[in-house]
Length: 228
Image (cartoon, rainbow, N blue to C red; front, side, top):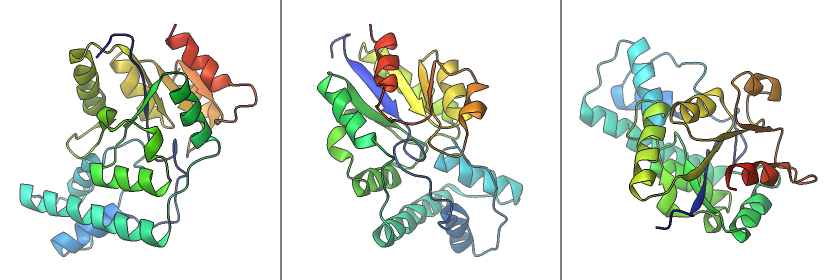
């Protein structure tokens, strides 16, 4: 892979696709069904990996999960997501498809860096009809990492081993910003999700936009500053 390869790694929930607060909490449903209990959910999971969420719920409920039980929960989580998306397909945020198309035309590779499991992430992308704009060679998922910092760390190691150093992370939560900055990867925050522009600004992202409205091409201009 040439060193000039330029990669944009997109978060999925709240960044590429719309948040769905009205949809059931699938993590707690999966845990309760596999374990046969009535566990207490956690309130804020923004930016966390699926594995992290499951383990966090287990910790606050004093549940000891065996490796097999943990795997069964993640598999059920995938199945619950598949069923939910069949009933209510995911939808891309405004101008996401156009932005992905424009970045592809400019020679950038669009990938994914998400806390979702691989199955859940791919289901959401496919449902939102974004698959054709994304390069699966640069997909990084949250089913094997207990926090987003480890996910980004592994991602950067993978890319550096391929001599790729021109990468930008795009996300909508403080954890997206914090984890990217810890690995010295430029990060653009988008106030598309649960966090406001002002809330995200407090974490000092390298770039910040309210959304992907391309009236003044602000997002593309920000990319240019990282990929000169």
